[in-house]
Image 1 (cartoon, helix red, strand yellow):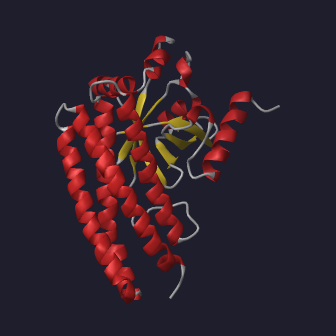
Image 2 (cartoon, helix red, strand yellow):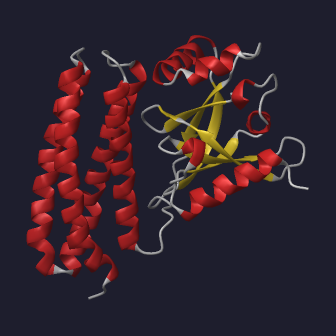
Image 3 (cartoon, helix red, strand yellow):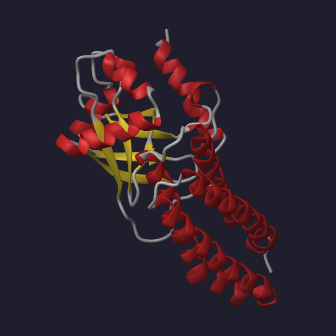
Length: 281
C-alpha cells in the first residue's frame, strides 16, 4: 500500500514536471523545486518537492522543516551523507552542492525566511530541533544550461516565463508585505535583476550574432531588441537604487515600470525569434 506522504509527493512531482514547475494545491503561487538526493543508507535516488528561497548568485536556500516534525526529513539526512544533489526548477535542471549553514549565517537566513513567511516560525515553534537551513550551490558546467524544452523556441518561451512568474511573485510580495521592505524581498528583487542581466548578456553575445548570421533579414529586429536590453538595464539599475533605500512606494513604482516594459519586450522577442529558432531557413 502506498504511503500517504509518498503518494502526495509523487502527485506534486508529476504535476510539476508536466507543467514546467507550475502546481496547484498548497504549493500554488510559491517557489518550489524538486530536490533529488542519494539515500543515506540505500544509495538510491529520492526526489522531493521542497520550497526554496532565492539567495542571489549561484545558490538558493532550503529549510528542513518537515512541517515542524521532531525528526529531520529524510532528504536532509540524505544530503548530509551525500551533499551532491540534483535540482529541478521546472525549466532548468542542474547539479548542486549542499552546504548546511551554521551559526550567524544560518540565523540570518532563517530570520529572512520568517520575515517573508511567518509559517517558518510556526514550524520552528512546534519542535525542539533547530530547523536546518541549507544552501544549494549550483555546480557550473561547460556549455549551455540544461533547459527542459523540446526545441530552441520553446526554451526561449520557458525562460521568459520564469522571469514573468518571478516578477509576479515579487509584485504580490510587495503588495502584501506591509509598510517596510523586508530583507528577503530585497534579495528576491536583486536575484531577479541579476538573472535578467545574465540572460540579456547571453543573448547579446551569443544568440543574436548567431541569428544575424543565419537570418540577415532579422537584423532590424535584433537591433531593436538590443536597444530594449539597454533600456531595461536602465530600469533595473533604477530598481537597484530604490532597493538601497527605505522608500517602499518607490520600489513598488520601479517594479511596476519594469514589469510593463519587460512584458512588452518578452512578447516582441518571442514573436520575432521563435519562428527563426524553430522554423528553419
